[in-house]
Image (cartoon, rainbow, N blue to C red):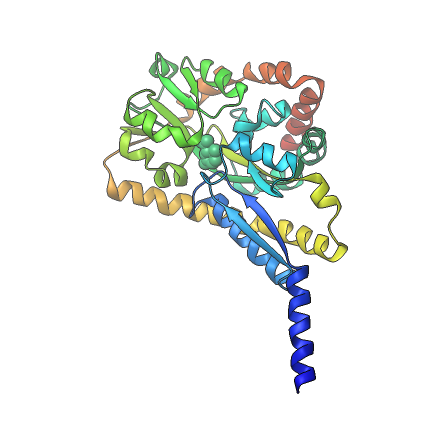
Length: 330
Ligand code: 6CS
């Protein structure tokens, strides 16, 4: 009996010794879409590795801004993070493809297929990430974005003198200048205070974020232009991925693949439920743009594709051309 207890104890110690802790930083708070993704990833990895991998999730605010999280992954201090292209433009200019308006399919199935399978994104853009010491693991949509403001935004004239907060990628400034706004880039954590103090007039984000960050409490109107889904990328440190044991690597690849369907359904539900919550707890004005109103913005957005190519160079041009072809072939 004593021998058996001894064996069990030594096995437990050996398993403990073999347990790895992976750090996964997200750019959003607990209860967000990115949190749901990271928590499910942690569960899947624990299950599939038989407890040998424990993933700790670091919510926004615990390790730094989005730009700082990317640096931590590049340097290997953490293994995994969300990196929204809206903040990644100075590091990987090509990633600003995700900031081009009226480019992505409006229909769910088509959008999912494009984000999951596009060679333009996973191979060409993936190579650009890799050159910056980032492995592009997944491309995740978090829902269509709405503009919030101290007034409805139906026309470019409504954007006149409007201080629109954007994420910090340089292309976003050009995207909102094209509508006539005064774009004001800033990190996520500063947005609520800046709205409250009237340092900015509005911001743009998916509905679940507008609810959980309480932006709707300090805004008068929400406009739904369906110009762009919020698209984030999941990145890992390449040396960390390359040196995984083969069975852990298999569990890792399976987990990332399984999360595609999971997170798409989660973001749909979060965005639906939280829109109801905003409606129930505020009298914010909701404005759906007509097709004609959207068309005015779409026309204004088209020259920004040339600006993207200027910023992202020859590879950017190839990514854009290939993505347009893939989209049109869906
Ligand atoms: O607006 C932002 O900065 C942030 N918005 C969302 C929905 N996720 C992360 C990003 O940093």
